[in-house]
Every structure is written in structure tokens, then in C-alpha cells.
Amino acid sequence: MATGFGKKWAGVVLAAGLCVASAPMAVAESLSDALVAAYKHSGLLEQNQALLRAADEDVAIAQAALRPTLTYMISHGWSDPNTSISGNSTWATTAQLTAEFLIFNFGRGKAAVEAQKEIVLATRDGLTSVEQQILLRAVTAYLDVRSAIENTQLQANSVRVLTQELRAANDRFEVGEVTQTDVALAQARLAAARASEASARGDLDIAREEYRAATGNLPGNLSAPPRLPMTAKTLEAAKAIARQRHPDILSAQHNVVAADLASEISMAAMKPALVGNAQTKWQDAGGQDFVSNSVGVAVSGTIYSGGKLSAEYRKTVAKAEAARAGLHQARLAVDQGVANAWARLAVSAASLEATDRQIRASRVALRGAREEASLGSRTTLDVLNAEQELLDAEAARITALSNQYLAAYSLLSSMGLLTAEHLKLGVVTYDPEAYFNTVKSAPVHRVSPQGKRLDSLLEALGKK
Image 1 (cartoon, rainbow, N blue to C red):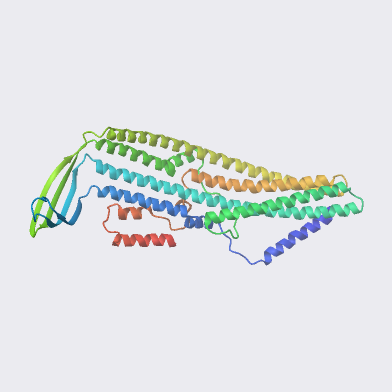
Image 2: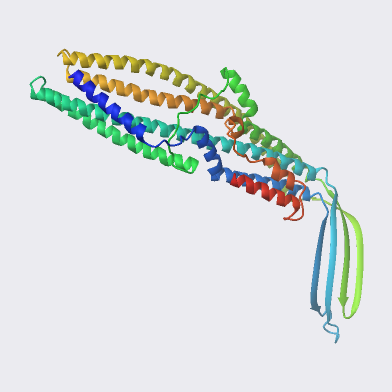
């Protein structure tokens, strides 16, 4: 029985090999290809890039508040100042040009500019955090598809093997070597294997859809992942890198600085402001022209506002305290993320090594069970159990290998290094400095040589 089964199984493997060899060679899609596709496809990344550009404009808005303002007003109307006098009504046209400029407000305006710059830096780090999430999702989707494919193939092989086992059990039953119980056991195992194969195919369909959501297209022929990425030699070294590089910590640090500046602005808001103004006014009333000019300075401030300014100051102080607490929480979360990823990487490596040993031992046990069954010292159930143990070990190895890669890339993410630049993906990355340098000085016109160059750059980033 064992010899006959071995020949049949060898024929199945040979036929499968010939089918693969005769199929047209498809270009394998690598993990790097998936990461590049995810970077280009993600609408979430584009959304946060737009939010960063909006934050850049807040710097320009704060900068504009330090500059003079020039406004105009033109009016035309009819008036009758004294209805008791006949013919006193008149039509008048008025044109007025007013300029105002800040002279001194205890540094409130400059602090506002610096606060917005810190918010821009925090938003940039938030963009990096989103980039890491997108790339990690792509890694997960890639590994899930490969694992699902391997599990589907494994379950299909199990169905083929158990089909051969059932045929052999029927043949042996017909000659009286085994009982109907052995045949029923083989039938039950085959039915369970078919159910597992159907479940594996369903898992593969789900994994393929997640891959399309993450990268923008369905997976093709996925190549084996490259060697594990370099991370850190020790856990403490990984944590040290994370504290310096992780975007969540960097963003929280900038938020603390921005919150402190907001407190300074609220304090300065309680003090007066010195503003200069100049105005020229022309009026045509009743055929007579009048022109007036004025230049002066004004000191303005709030004497009493019902406690509003004090409340706003206390509010900014509370937000600054919350920002510091947020920084503390970010550091704790990053440290925990690094430690968890480090532990998962160690566990997956140990699990992979253990499953390799389990597979080798299970193969030896299966060969022995088949040989002993052919001699009558083992039952069909013993052979089926040995086959199931080998199947479980091979499935566990697929999971362990996927978990090892996922843990390695999760560790990179927890260290703040899972970026297109660090991974050297070769994709044109978004330059956060380009838009900021164009608008930080608050240019007046929407369309300008600088703006045209920026539009070309953004268009190129979108196309490449």
C-alpha cells in the first residue's frame, strides 16, 4: 500500500511541476513593488499632504498680520440732513483709502508666527506617521496574501493526499485487509480537508481584497519577501532610536512648544497694542470736492472684558499642560510598541525554528507510520493522524514565517524608520519644504513664478 501510494503521490507532484513549467513566466511582484504602489495609491497620504499645505498657509496668515494693511471704500448715496430746509438734500460720492500698520504689541505677532511654524513641524511628523501606517498596512497585506496562497496550496495538497488514502483504504477493504471503520475514517478526514481548503480559499479572497485596498491593485505573482530588514542590535538601542526618530514623539514635542507659545500670546493679549494709521478721503457733494488726509498712532487695549482674557490665558496654560502629558504618553506608547515588536520578533524566530524541527520529525513519523501500516502494525487512523500532524506543522511554519517578517517591519515602524526614504524604495517622495518655502513669506498673488514652479512640482509628484 505504501509503495503504491508513493508512486501515485510522486505522479501528482510531477504533474503539478510540469504544469508550472509549461505555464508562461509572469513577472513576480516584490514587496518593494507593493510598498511603492501603496505610497502612490494612498488617498490618506494625499489627504494629509493637503492638510500640511493648509498648515503652511497658517504661517503665511500669521506673517501677514505683522504687515501693513491697505483698504479702500467707495460709496455713493443721497442724504437730507435737515428736512426743514428746502433743497438741503444732496447726492455725494466718497472714496477713502486707509492704511494701518502694527508698531508694537509686546511680541504677540511674532509669537503667533513661531507657534504656527511649530504646528507645521508637528503636522509634518504626523504625515510621516501616516506614511508609516500606509507602508505597514501594505507589508501586512503582502504577507497575508502569500500566507493565504501557501495555506491554500497546502490544503489542496492535503485533499489530494487524503483522496489517495481513501482510494487505498477502499482497495484494502475490498481484499479484507481493513474494516469499514478505516474507510469511514478516511472519508471523514477527506471531508474535513475539503472544508479546510474551502476556508483557505475564502481567506485568500479576503487577503486579495485587502491587498487591493492597500496598494490599488489585485496581487499578481508575489515573490518571496527579501531578507529581514536591519533594525537594532539590542532592545535598548531600538528604544533609543525610537525616542529620537519616532514621528509621534517629535510631533508631541512640537505641540508642547506651540502650546507654550500660545500661553505667551494669551498673556500678551492682556497688554495694549500700538498701531499706526494713515487715511486719505475724497468726497464730491453737491458739486463741491473735499479732500482730507490724516496720519496718526493709536494705543488700544482692553480694560474689562468680563474675565474673558483671563479665562483664555488659563485655557492655554491648561492646554500646555495637556500637551506635556501627551508627550509623556507618546513616549510611553513608543517604548511599549518597540518592546512589543521586539518580543514578537523573538517569539516568531523561536517558533519558526521549532516548526522546522517539528516538520522534519513529522515527516519521519509519517514515513514510519505508512511503512508500519503496510506491515499491519499500524492502523489507518495512525497514518491519518501522522498526516494531520505534518499538515499542522507546515501550516504553523507558514504563520511563523509571516509573523517574523511582520514583527520585523513593525519594529521598524515603532522605531520611526518605516518610511519610503529609509527603505530606499526609489519612489519620488513628497517634499514638505517645497510648499512651505513658497508660501511662508505670504505672497500676494495666487499665480506667480514661484507658484507655477510649485504647481509643476506637485503635478510631478502626483504623476510619478
